Image 1 (cartoon, rainbow, N blue to C red):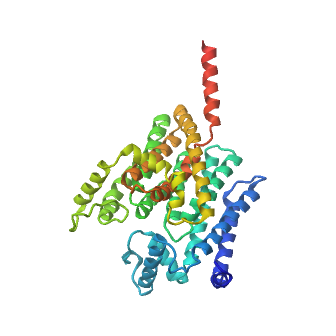
Image 2: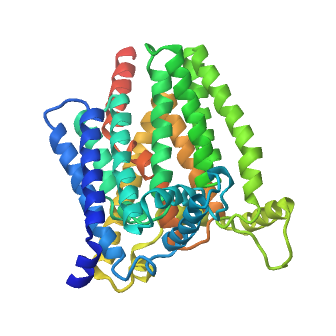
Image 3: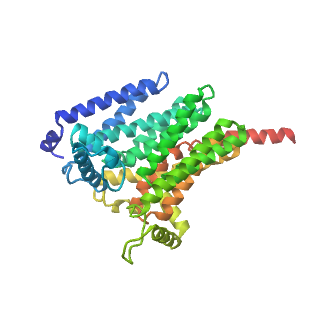
Length: 423
């Protein structure tokens, strides 16, 4: 971006958006992050992540907001149409939109504050870094240290790909944020034994509402998130026999059933992200949709598809990614991230083994979510490294919770010591 383009983009309106949102992130940090001598440094580092996203916004839109991007540009155009409908008096529940409910949310922003794709991206950037706060609090509730919680949450928001997917005017930022909040609230609803019944009910209902919203954003999230929660609550109930856990599980199950029939099946026909075979032409009904998806799944080499979802893009193929081809800095950043991701997969094995040894209900639920989400995407996504790379981003946060290998070896030593004394 040359100096003239940058000055044209750096309007008073955009400066105001950035300043207000930075102040909001700083204030929420003081409210959400527990007191610690390192708290201010943690919040400042989160602000730095937000600043880096601001810079990325201007870089991405150097060619103009009406020309840059793929999905983000499409959503921007649909959001402008949604804003026009709202301003003409159409109720929000009757607006017409395509692809995803996120375009309605962005359309509301455009209707209230005016059409500004920079501002939409600034809001996405803030949602992204707020995910770090909730991930941090989730770690603290899992009894992780402040240092470990900070490392996990900061590693999450400083990943180059995470910054890219969550800064454009796409739905990824909100999708990942809602998934993290669901898991955070799911833990709080069971962990906080001193809460009133009223507060517990509100928390559980909030989880159910967010499950529905996550489905509006990505149609199969219901099954991955809902399934993971049910696994978590099932094992927790077996361990504790607490009635509130059983009630929570029933609410989640009812939500999954209702949302399946009212939202998933109603929106499957023509859903753009599902691999429907339209080679025969004609208007497919819902049975044709299922038959087509099943046919494509059966034609896949499942082990190769799972391996591709977890490992692509391979290092030698990174330079061929269309969005970064020819950009040496971006290619290098992605290669470094891929190496770190491979290390994450290796270290996570020990965290997973530790969760299995301890039979930790919450971590088993998270593992079920990771497996379900990975399997769904491995089976239905096109076998392209870029596609796997983007969709895999939803499991980065939960995977980071498993990367500490020390608990596994500590517990192994403890078990070995107990057996030695017994013998």
